[in-house]
Image (tube, rainbow, N blue to C red):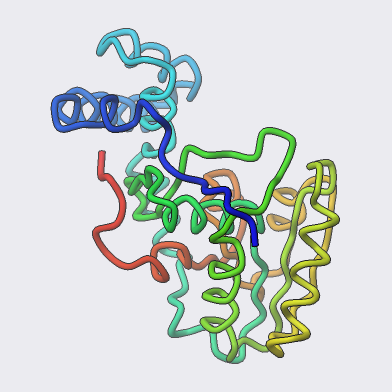
Length: 231
């Protein structure tokens, strides 16, 4: 059993303490406003980051929390609840969901975006290593989706150790009777966006939520309300 933990960044308690909440929320307000008026995401984030003197990690949090009002409305209109997934086909943005749950279980920073999704700041960075919360996170997902007619996980094939992770999921699925299919693909986002509307995608990735079809905010539903820092 791994002893590693996908816990908090050593500076997060300071960077996201109450002292910085007003500036972070004002920056998120401004970025959402700019996005709603057609500004490019990168240039707009640089603008508000400079204005509020945010460091790199704070800027990342503001960027991941923000969306235009129009984008939020479109995303909400295609959202499917966990309670509605019985008998449905489900496709999971693998690293997106798994790392969020691992981070939350390990006490890492979780953000609540303006679209209601939970997001983390952990990331894969080219190599995935399972942690002590990996199996509990996977079992939580497996039990929640037992009534789905099909569950397919999509993972990034180029990420190191994704093959080992696939083996772990397959063995867990067989042991627990989850009936999962696990796919390693070069571009999961592109694959998930291209799925037909009858497939519900589990992800909090903004590109998928904007360009894809029906989706489920499973990370937030599993973790519960009030678990993310709302900027």
